[in-house]
Length: 602
Ligand SMILES: *[C@@H]1O[C@H](CO)[C@@H](O)[C@H](O)[C@H]1NC(C)=O
Ligand SMILES: *[C@@H]1O[C@H](CO)[C@@H](O)[C@H](O)[C@H]1NC(C)=O
Ligand SMILES: *[C@@H]1O[C@H](CO)[C@@H](O)[C@H](O)[C@H]1NC(C)=O
Ligand SMILES: *[C@@H]1O[C@H](CO)[C@@H](O)[C@H](O)[C@H]1NC(C)=O
Ligand SMILES: *[C@@H]1O[C@H](CO)[C@@H](O)[C@H](O)[C@H]1NC(C)=O
Ligand SMILES: *[C@@H]1O[C@H](CO)[C@@H](O)[C@H](O)[C@H]1NC(C)=O
Image (cartoon, rainbow, N blue to C red):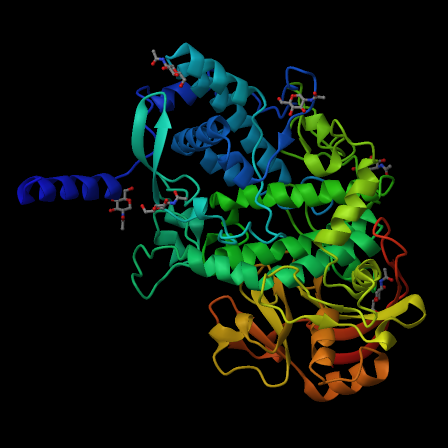
């Protein structure tokens, strides 16, 4: 190649990359996707079963990537979905914009239903795309993949496979090379961002986000204020740093929360003055805060435009399914809505038969309600963790408990005992904590006194705060000793004991209603005991330590320190709970009543 040809080739490539668009199917996507009757009601139905009669599974994104036909269809369908005209009620733009957040709905808090509507649309598009392949062999392979197509989830509660980034690399590149019915093309990666067409800045409200043409994660405004690039490496590092806390919080939710109301949402516990203050919703908030890192995911009403939203909510839905398998009879009780939503005012009574507007179950105008959406099977999908799989004799429930103990309980004293019994040669309970972040955690040593009489003590910081206490989301960090000076480093500080992310916005639910979350401290305390900073994790040692050494700080989403006296309704208290060890890996630990030990702020 001479230099001129080479230059032309490079310029060509640059033009191609800069102007990369959605996949060009060689057909008019706008008219292909436009509905015949634009006024026909949008009905959310059940996706068809697989040809052998089983309910198809939602898979982890990396497993979808590993299957060429599924992956191609997913990317092509998402690319086509994002290209649908924004004035169409079934466009990505409008489905994502459907911010209906009834506080009580089982699969509906924060957009589980939006997730399903997007799955239904993608399933339809995947079928249409499979039909476009002209080669009959290929067409039949794609049609097979399209028939049991279900949206993937991203498992943000597990470490990535060896050698891979925590936040999967498929989200990172702005462009990608994609095969499809119209050949190989360089396209805009539909997992990197949603590109507004057109951009309606008034609808997006917040500067500077309202002027950006596409959704961003960790936008680097130092490079450009106009169209800052997303720093997905920062998102990955931030979420990886939160993984141990996320695992502990989920372990506590699975092993000790048995009421649907308190498990499901972050409003109920403080409304009822309960001592169990965490919820699956509060854990899900962490992914919004750090997945956005000042980008769209961090802003409640903008979050669902980021393609990550749908994979995040599918994961949240998977966790709800697991909890439901463990607590099959638990269900919601009638209660007063703690937040104002699209269709219900704060303060109105809602129950499991309250219509989940705007999601219709049939064209006659019947809406879905929570009782109707109690299982994923009614929508035609399932998860491998909660299904009977061929070739397994153990009940799915038992299998799930063992899985959760190994996966989320690895750093809990509860599982350390089981581990040390299994290893026998380690009577002192020394156990290499391989959990969560590989190699980055010191080994944990559980002193004999930590697990005396088959009981030990768990420590949790409970936080509650008014809805919309600040203008936007914020985080509360707890440190052993003095926090670093630079707010930007708090989330990664070596002496950070834990944090809680508050995903909210001003005006959400008014100023009386509260939301809550927790910071598990036991793992950090065990590490301090291991280092000799405290004697053990029992009350005498811990309370003295907390009173003299525990510090907390509040940071706004743009990494500014916030005076806690400006955070309306803030309460931070430390409680302890006696926990009875399980006898085997197929049991959970048994939690006693929490006792308030120390109040950091009220
Ligand atoms: C049904 O087919 C799917 C593949 O489409 C397969 O994964 C599943 O194991 C099959 N189920 C049964 C019960 O054979
Ligand atoms: C059709 O696709 C199959 C599978 O990819 C391939 O092996 C075959 O060569 C293709 N046939 C033609 C005529 O291109
Ligand atoms: C991202 O782009 C780089 C450079 O073009 C490429 O090497 C890499 O394979 C891409 N990653 C993915 C997940 O497509
Ligand atoms: C944003 O998109 C509009 C058209 O939709 C275009 O005119 C404008 O130049 C774009 N801005 C940037 C910074 O890419
Ligand atoms: C919770 O406590 C507050 C203040 O102490 C009280 O006003 C309220 O009635 C209590 N709520 C319930 C459900 O007990
Ligand atoms: C649920 O609320 C509706 C009003 O939205 C009411 O008509 C119905 O009786 C309630 N059902 C139960 C079981 O409380």
